[in-house]
Length: 210
Image 1 (cartoon, one colour):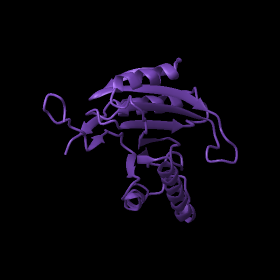
Image 2: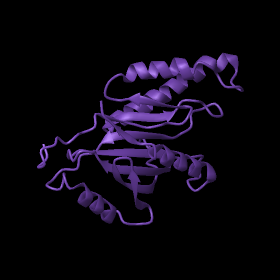
Image 3: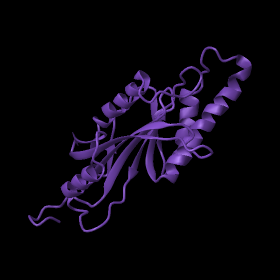
């Protein structure tokens, strides 16, 4: 309840417009059902160039890739995982983004503007900016992350993260984190296109109230 006698409205969720060939996998519940739906809806056809005898092995490998990405996203506290589900040249495009709750505690929880200013200041550099989205402002941070041989991150990747307060001054925060190795060239045109696509998707972000 605000001091003016009105109830602060907190969203029940969010919406994003994702491009054709991408899918959402919920990570808190319904994960198995979503993976089954993707597997039988999007991966039922084998691309040209894959021999008939290799079709089942191809589909099982794609399924393994999807399940691996979902498990990793869940371990990282994700709410939803978004990733391409249409194979390109016999494999899935190596890109994904995760929507997750972000714990930012302390007395400044309700002062979203101050927290955003601190986030931007603490990571100041050419890869940090602020962006207005529907219902508020987010800090955008872009970086390059080196591979960790023998661990989950086995290739260099380019990452972009948006951090924003949940509408309604609830003290909750949300992050939308994108990662891709692109085509192996982090500064190449293909990688740039994937980053631009992610930025365009985030531009459609809206809170939902049900």
